[in-house]
Image (cartoon, rainbow, N blue to C red; front, side, top):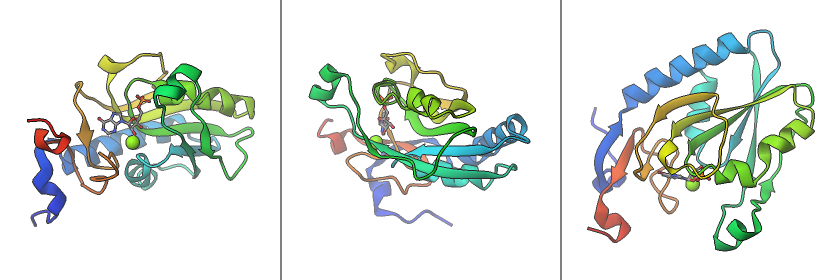
Length: 188
Ligand code: IMP
Ligand code: MG
């Protein structure tokens, strides 16, 4: 059945299909299930980009788990100089003595994770362990070092949308990951 979505008209090219995403999410879930067998696992998604990936992942992970969300402010010109990304929505539950896996849609510059001090913050709340799982990794754009423990795909230095990732709040619901047509950015 063809995907019917008016968003599709804005897509130049699909770079990761629905099938490729499903296969890789299953593989990641298998790896996570092995690594966290017998451990108290909590997934912490960073809103909003994580939601599609997280919801697919939790249905494939084969060990008991809970999940929670945080929201952080994005870094603008002023936050870059102040070096702070504020936590806008904190966790609902304690992570004390739990094994925490932070779930991201994409690690790009690394500034969100680094400037929010999220990993340090979780450790200071006495999590048993803190690791990072990202669907996409764009290492060519990295400005600060971020430990990535589970990685779905490495992508080129291109702006991608779909499967949770947005451009100006749109395209998160596309079932694949694609590149926008240049005219959508006001380019081309
Ligand atoms: P970082 O702080 O630069 O690592 O970027 C993290 C956030 O920037 C991600 O969680 C996304 O919300 C956003 N982002 C970075 N690259 C892309 C992209 O190619 N498409 C959509 N969002 C992106
Ligand atoms: Mg975003």
